[in-house]
Image (cartoon, rainbow, N blue to C red; front, side, top):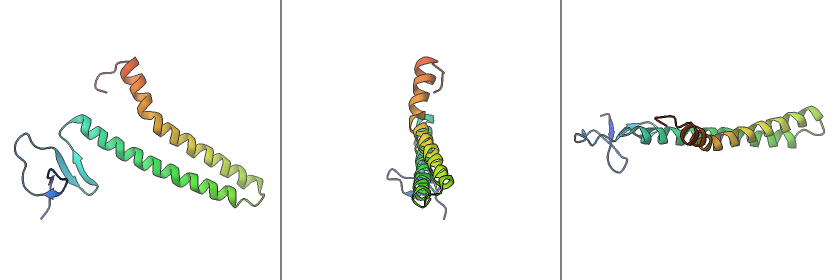
Length: 114
């Protein structure tokens, strides 16, 4: 039997929630909050930051491997340095993207709905 909803503990259930109580839908990645737009966006943002951070970490490790195994080859060393710089820059952009959106979108430009 398929479970469509989550109970209050995050476990899958087939019981239809009471009217006005629809808050989370069960998926393969867990319970997605759908009761409000802010909860849903926070869930998506958390997943996006986690995936982006994981990719950046893999790239940083690979860049370190390239640098360590360059063996004096200037092209491999340069490629490793460039990859490390790009990975760290991307990670910083991911980390500060929420702050930048808050600063410019909400506080300065006062865009409605953000």
